[in-house]
Amino acid sequence: ANEAGGQLRIGYRIALDVWRLTFGLGFEVGGGVLAQRYAPYSAAGVIAIAPRFILKAHFTDVISLFVSADLTVTYLNYGETVQTATARWIPRPSVSAGLMFAF
Image (cartoon, rainbow, N blue to C red; front, side, top):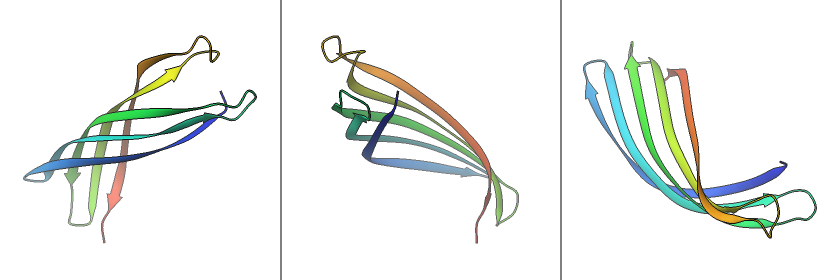
């Protein structure tokens, strides 16, 4: 589907440093809009919640490896047509990893 949208979220994250590791947990909540970019054009408001987790391994003061994961769950009115659309929660998990340089 050719769709576009945006969300605005607020959240909080806590972190615990143990030796060269940082463990973090957080939670976000917010809302937004999702719009179809093909005829018939339609838009829907969405609600999103997302528990988050992060793990960092600090090698030096400047270099770290990290793994971050979240389970975003979006509530929206979804269906093949406007007539068949129903409101439901849709999970959108994601995981990312990388090398971080702090200056």
